[in-house]
Length: 302
Image 1: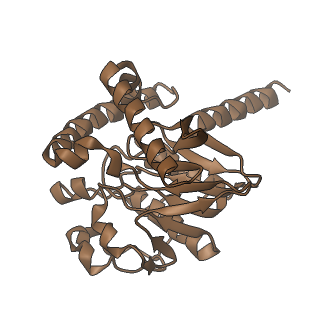
Image 2: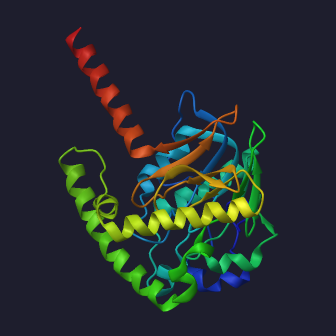
């Protein structure tokens, strides 16, 4: 979608002209010099929602500074075009995320961008390559141990999106109200030196209808993968990181959801032996900070 970190968005993205130029200068949050980045064969992230206050840019920047991979899939809703059309919001930290992704592409990481429903304005550019970032409607990924996975955002299987698009927009508005509440809670917890916690994520797991919708969605997506003859599917869209195995015509079909960077702050990774893992980055950061605090206390006591 972008070239070499300094270029313009394609003409078809004129509605997002305010973020057309990405500065060639260093990011506002300097890239951390980590002694040893975690290296993975593949990383999948989705539902970042750049252009909204709900985007947890701080945690995503931390994730990008501590990990590396041969391939990275951006599995949709990276930019929230729906919200940007209503009200422009683009803080420096969102530029910093774009800068880091572009830098990965320049370093040789294969970056594949599969647009979702919130960044559907990018879909007409499927098949094109901008600044080392491949745009694709969907993709197939072969793991190191020989499994074939279908990769797509997943809104194709959302009956609300397909049948009642107006209702999806209403739901989006209500969702962003919840995200504001989420932000207030996060700010208070940060002042109190408490780890990140998502009130919206907790509520979603408690509401029966939401749980039923998620379960049905997972079944439908896995069945579609099975019908296409692949071993599994990786998607996003519903902001719920999950790993499940379904059965289709007597054989197992893996379902992987890489979560989001609004509520859960998750990523899906493939290790070099083909093993898959969902990372919960808020927990990773809390664990790292706890170790650092313990080490500092030990040094002071010595």
